Image (cartoon, rainbow, N blue to C red; front, side, top):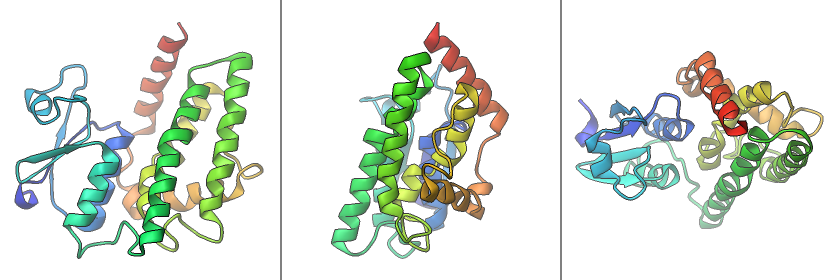
Length: 221
């Protein structure tokens, strides 16, 4: 039984839904998972998130909330006695929110720009993406993870990158993150993928490859 009616609406290949799963698992929260078909969204999902109609959506005791970053902070605040996701210190907490927003506002769009372009336009996008990752390295200075010796909020938010980005690089035929340009990010990729929490939750690579390859072809058509 899910703890106090905790239900997560997601999609098996969605890195944004996986973020929330990582947070719930770190906290030891039992939950019911609803795997949505995004082409035929359930009435329940649309009822719980009528604004954006997107996943993930977490429902706790009948109260829904959307947007993965909002949900992760909620999980951390509600299950206080579990694994600490956000730092206790207010300044460190603010810094974690800053870098998480940087990932959302700078890193993710930069990768998308590389993914959906070719030629000279792609080269320009690639340079901007690499520069964004070099900026993100500042938050990893003298650390194994963004959270320090253990993963925290920024690691969970950026945690889709080590797996999905390598697949994207393979599809588009370019290297965005490598040990020569961003050694700290590259090392963090390896460290994050070695976590038991992560290894046991990643969707099949072939499925991610196929769906993203088809999506790129559609975008370029």
